[in-house]
Image (tube, rainbow, N blue to C red):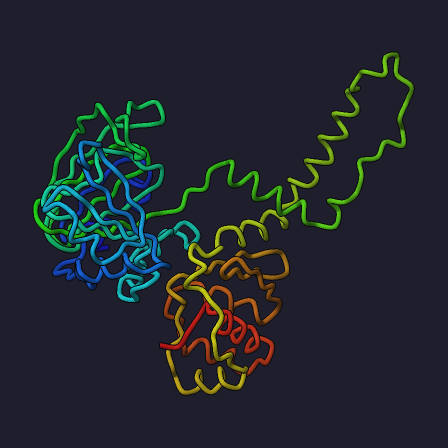
Length: 383
């Protein structure tokens, strides 16, 4: 893959993914950023857009964080340099940015998070830090000098007096300057520090990495909503104890058996995780259509060859069960059986759905109803 500097996707995953950094010169040759600094500033003024400004020296305070939305006048008050504007989930609002994610589909859909834009004038930075997720840093405009290397964790010393996790004593191991089209891959825990050499925009393609706490609490919350969760623990074989204060070993065995039975149900785990992993990050962009369509409307559009694509903020995934396929879209599950099962991988393969293949399913009223549901809930739309 040219995007990976000539490496195949398998070679990259084997040798670099979550192992070591990789600098890729001209991963996207001739790349031109689809958004301008002024457009990013405009988005930062929108209520639904997550935005932040980081100022390195804010009236004597180090690395101060300001959360949006901002008023237009806020940008006139900023210093000439040494600050950064961050726009989270830029792909949710700009289809051309969302299209970049198609280049990263060698990573499973459920692992992809979003694309963050970082605009900075000369000297702008978010400070030396580390992330606990994988990231590709694509230089979209101008030049940024990156120093990176060395493993960091929660014990690494940090700068006081800032809400940000800025490393206080870190030198890095390698320094490179990225030009438009260049890209840097960083695994989790690698320290890095990027400083703008001129007005520049960097696009960060980030990946989801749920914590064990997220997984445990999410799954147990899911299990607690099932009908069996209201059943009481029973003990029909209870025996008289020498001391009533004793919690007998067979009680712990019984508890272990009950909990293992619930946690060990792979079907429940699969259905929960599909919903968990596809829950939309932004509820402000995956919204129901104001003018709902009916199945006939969808059928006519498909026959006409109109291009159906995912909402930029939507997440699609599927999982093969024994006798059915579970399709997950924006936190909802749909169970497909028989001839309907191939629809799930078709819908999940790419943001722009293959209309030639989809046309084969358009005559099935049940599947057409599913597509209509996805359309009306805002998960797909016609370009």
